[in-house]
Image (spheres, rainbow, N blue to C red):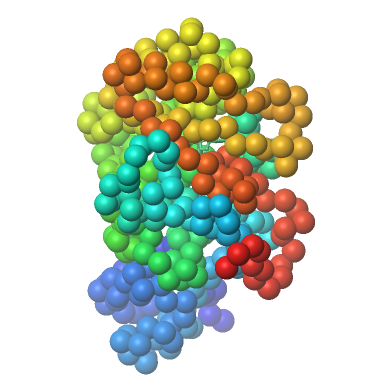
Length: 374
Ligand code: SAH
């Protein structure tokens, strides 16, 4: 009896070479498979036309290319953002968001060339999320599991195939905490940068502050960009907003960031949402400025997006956007900090930052459904 066929989607270049050897082929076959799977996005071995019939037949006996099932696409009428829902083999679902050029930031005047060409894809790394930030929709779903590297990469391959567009940037800011799924996320980074031509410096990993793995990014001298969802530099406030603070406090986060910066000399991005009466006081802003002095950084201010549709109760439901945001941004800039104000691209399709949540009812397998304008 033959062994179970190996799913090649998500294997790195090295793993594909090893796989080729394991079925009696030369190592260089791995590089050919790598190019077909990730560069050209082949979904079947028969499509790999330059590989030779005998090799392709051997491949179909030993391997599969098993991806996600596309389940729905929503288009934002307001700004062209697209949100994709994918079903996983075990019936769970994840979402990815494609953000059109020049809509990521507001209030910066005319976008430069790079921004005009930028097409950013936001990927999920876990089914749900265990961190339960008070303001985030994903947290309300609870946590099921890490995504495999194949499931992460296939979000990219499918969106590229479905839209036929050249994606220039990738951000790990979808559902889940990427640094809790370190190995699979880094394997996806390798595949995207070497196989799909997204330079690692155009890939952002956003973390709620998983300190040990921030250090590890530094130790491994990873060239991805690091973003940290900070939200408050006052311990008690941050712990209320982001329970992960009770595991890795601000002192530990600060030390991890110093270690990361020493190793990489890369500037860190802090993401901050200002909430009315929570983290918008003079004291909070002073603490934020002090924290921002620890390592060279940039601050991205994200407007608070409503998560009312998740039925959140308690503290989370009481949160509302600060009315002082503009003043605070001025204050931060006066302190010589680089501050960007993010737009709310995709808010009308619940595809903006923090709004990704897959509801039970959305998960019955069905034909691809397109909602909204096409
Ligand atoms: N777990 C990672 C990545 C996913 S969240 C992290 O925490 O960074 C991606 C970004 O969306 C984070 O900066 C997060 O703080 C932000 N976010 C979460 N909920 C939000 C909301 N309701 N409105 C605006 N931004 C939100």
